[in-house]
Image 1 (cartoon, helix red, strand yellow):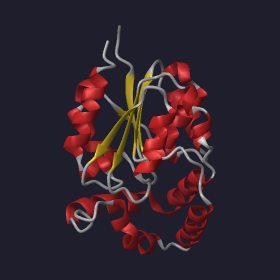
Image 2 (cartoon, rainbow, N blue to C red):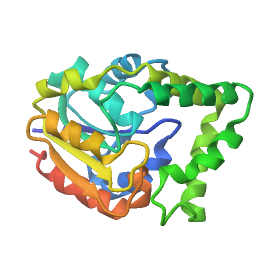
Image 3 (cartoon, rainbow, N blue to C red):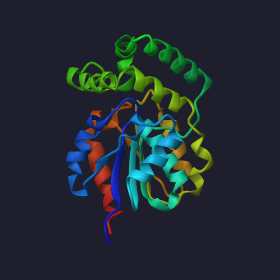
Amino acid sequence: MTRPRLVFLPGLAADEQMWRSQCEALADWRPAVADVHTHHATLPEMASALLRQYEGDLVLCGASMGGMLAMEAARQAPQRVAGLALLGTTARPESEDMRQVREKAIELFAQGMVREVIEPNVAFAFHPSRAREGRLVGGYLEFVLRAGAHQLIRQNRAVIMRPDARTHLPLLRCPTLVMCGDADQLTPKDCAEEIASLIPGAHFVMVPECGHMLTMERPEFVNAALRSWLDTLAP
């Protein structure tokens, strides 16, 4: 019996850089980092493309928007998903307040004001103790700016239009790990606790002294939690 394929799903405007530590720590699983979020306009379209690209049973590990994508893929093909790891994400649809924030940002991105929007808001992505760490913050800015205005606009719109995943989570039967930073300001811990309460048998892990960017802020902790959970899935 072979292992299911481990696929990492980046967050909004992110790429393989945000999963670098996990790819190294879990190299024996031969993980892939998906990029379907850069090629399609909606989460359902991204999920459909993901399921076409990777054959067989999958373990989907998604952070932030990547977690939303993982939940949508599990809705479309629950029989294909052998495990879900959902990091710093939410199953809720977009709130009206956040919709307005994103729409304003989209207007500015369309004017080419990417750095002007992103840099003043970087601190919200990290634990207060790390919001001024040059290497950490610089790495985050690097891949967001690399994504550019077009991707930021399209991916924000995809998040705005995301479906309410809470309706199908109770139907899932795959092993599920839910993780959240204790100081996550973008998807607070009540969002993660809600997901864990909806999926039967889900395992919830709170990451101490951590904000929204779990994989970059506390890589050793996240890697250990993923390794422990993945070991339960190995044949």
